[in-house]
Amino acid sequence: MDNLTNIGTIKDILSRHGFTFSKSLGQNFLINPSVCPKMAQNANIDDNTGVIEIGPGIGVLTNELLKVSKKVVAIELDKRLMPVLDETLGEYDNLKIINADVLKIDLKNLIKEEFEGMNVVVCANLPYYITSPVIMRLLEEKLSIASITVMVQKEAALRLCADLGTRDSSAVTVAVNYYSNPIFLFNVSSGSFMPAPKVDSAVIRLDVFDRKQKPKDEKMFFKVVKGAFIQRRKTLSNSLSSYFKMDKSAVNDILDKASLDKTVRAESLSIEDFIRISDLMCSIDL
Ligand code: SAM
Image 1 (cartoon, rainbow, N blue to C red):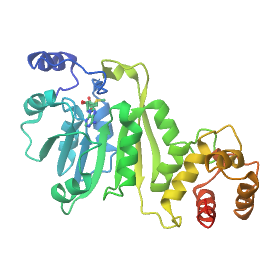
Image 2 (tube, helix red, strand yellow):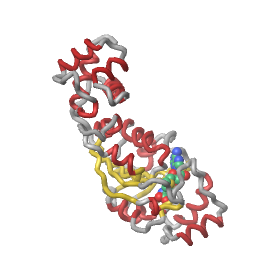
Image 3 (cartoon, rainbow, N blue to C red):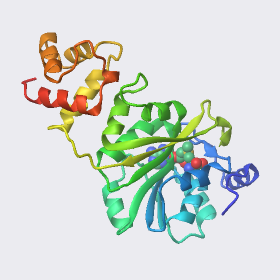
Image 4 (cartoon, helix red, strand yellow):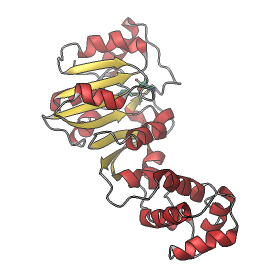
């Protein structure tokens, strides 16, 4: 069904199904007609692409994704939306809707069973209360996906797409850059949603790649990143010595071997710097 951004149409469908918005599920539905086609255009989709959508709501983005892709699998947690989606998207035979929690469903298996021979991407207007856990899950599980195009709060978009080595970068920026190339695509004002959230949003795309240069131990790498940013106003030396409960002199020794100044701060480090520190940490008893 087209017209899914029309406020009258939305109100009519929702009232017939007795649906009320759930704040705790992050239900802000898109009513700006230009956003979903633009998202679908920017999501690297062609006619051999399978799309995983998270949180279809009443199906406004799903409708656009179905027009340009081979198949869409949409994962929606709210059971009350199942009959709504039946009504709005029932005409498509290249759609599967799964009533499940995206944080719990077996995505590896889903990709294997639903998208054989297809290029797979994720495209979603994410429920904001789980932005980071969803993105990190998609990346950390090393799923066979080529890209993740998502609408997130503008502040989160800026943090995720910050340049490494600048003050806007954070532990999540490093993690995202470890697995992908993040690209800031476009802004979306809060008035584009019903109900309107308090903050603006933005659409970003993470182009996933297979990293060539890897640390000896990924767990240690991410512990170093976490420890480095946990007290971001402190020097790296202070943050790491308190996080790993190590003598400052031992940390300074590692920074020296990694060719880093002991006054350096986490925000100015590159992925390669973190890998060197992590590899040196692996060689000592913690
Ligand atoms: N795609 C629709 C749109 O753009 O209008 C709705 C987006 S709304 C921001 C987020 C959607 O995610 C809601 O439909 C909500 O019910 C769903 N959702 C919330 N938590 C979820 C979870 N853990 N797993 C799957 N879907 C979830």
